[in-house]
Image (tube, rainbow, N blue to C red; front, side, top):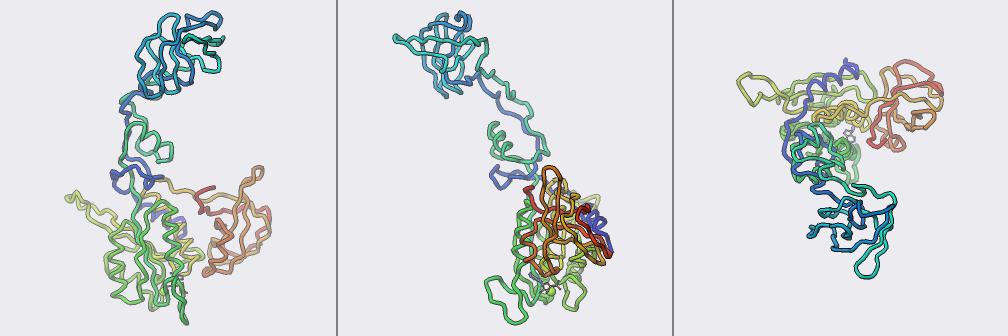
Length: 416
Ligand code: AMP
Ligand code: MG
């Protein structure tokens, strides 16, 4: 049986970034990684630009910052100046407008008093050449690389890409993830379960986890514990980058998933992990041929995760193995991962395998991470997850964990 760390290593060895694709720069690429260098198509700003509303003038006209000047033109943003500013002259200018020829400073409107006869009285003792002017190409020059491949697309990158005229870019695409629930007893959430039936919690939960990880979930439905039905839905799932199955992976008579995966060419790389909840976790790869052909190299075509059916097992299995894999496919580092946190109250616990126990993790400015296990009675107990935002890792054995002890905690939420 693998340890969690060994199992994760096997997963990551098989999760390489997907081929880059050109995509429109809509919010659906938010958080993805850029796969090309981006050069500016223009100087920014494209002209010497006024940074204030005021008057464009010649500093040499001022005595102790003062002068009375003749107003020769008004230049709103978006308009091109038509007249050069000569000695004794000024143009009224708005923020963002091009500086007219001849002017070498902008004095802000608050330091100016407009007089009768198209004149303005200026009083700005701090006036000096280039005051309130942003020089042409100060931000970037045409042809200059403004973003490198490997940059993650955040809102400011969207702004910058728009500024350099891009509406599409090469990105590391979001993996397409098929999700398949299995089990004769599983019914749609809209149905009132009959005797022995249980609603499909894992389908919606795994879709939400997939979306939270930045990937693209697609629910394939509920497969019956029957080879033909399972085979056809799994075949469909193997057309995606990743297939996640819930249920049917242990060693019971109706746990048909491992056999069918093998039959369909999926090579299982582990099937049990020393952890609780969720020991029977299967990870396999459907290998494809290198599209370049000749070398006959194998490339992984679909990563397959068989997670145990109990909802908390399924959730933990996803966070430990699927999420890091999805991030690797997107060329992101594994994160958010483990932090060490201080236990806030005594927690005696006995377990025969390292246990991922639902917990509430919080950050205290003076004391760092603090963690408190939440009330929870085991792998079917989804309710115990609601007050939790993390999993504290409890070592195997019989321990009285004391308030003040330090323990590793698996973070699962994005916004810490
Ligand atoms: P299995 O891994 O198929 O042996 O299932 C283990 C337990 O998890 C059983 O009690 C199942 O009823 C339950 N279970 C399996 N799939 C789901 C699901 N999609 N949603 C909620 N519970 C499930
Ligand atoms: Mg089952």
